Length: 304
Image (cartoon, rainbow, N blue to C red; front, side):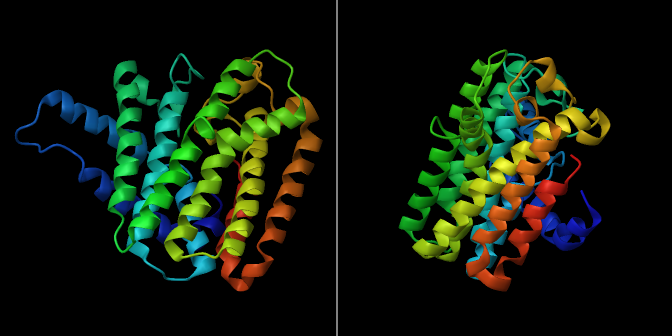
């Protein structure tokens, strides 16, 4: 993570990581009288969410709310950001399984199924998925309609019309030829849907207008695709120790990527085009969009 990004968001990241652990602990069994199997499951759940990562999605929840209404209902934002990260973490745990991407490393540490076992990893994903929606229903200081709206947004983004649908296309695409339009559509689901949901959740908590929501959705669409373009570039140019996951996995699996379709130089140009489009969508927010601007630049300039 770049030093400037750490300087800008280090305090917020530390705050978020503390709140994430606290909100997870509320769903853990008592150490005194619960079955050891449940204790082990909750240890694995904590392992899956607490071993680092960029935390881009939760930061986007906070940054979107800041753009709309600075300082508005921080406790509810903690719940929304934690729910988002739990869904993201569950998807990574399942992605790493042998039936999916079959990766032994995640964030520089053994993947959940390697640290524990495959059955436990599957249950970890299930538990995180359930806890995420439980958190949205408990978010403090929000009315019933806001909670319903947040549940709907995250459910759609995480399901077959979003992340899971994109994963299904991705699994089926190995070894096949894919047009650029279909590749963009796949990644808009697999990666972009949760990123857009991050912004919408922050906007819902902050009480966004319809025009503000449209601007946030446009920004989310562009940086979601930019995130994936940069991931594809790093899969080719990065090394395993820096990435924290096995480099070259997409090439080895013969998956369609932006680099495979466009080449490195065109992929870099596409990431830059998406960044510029994302920044243009933030003009209506003025100085309030400073955090969103910095996150967008980090996404396109990162080395892992």
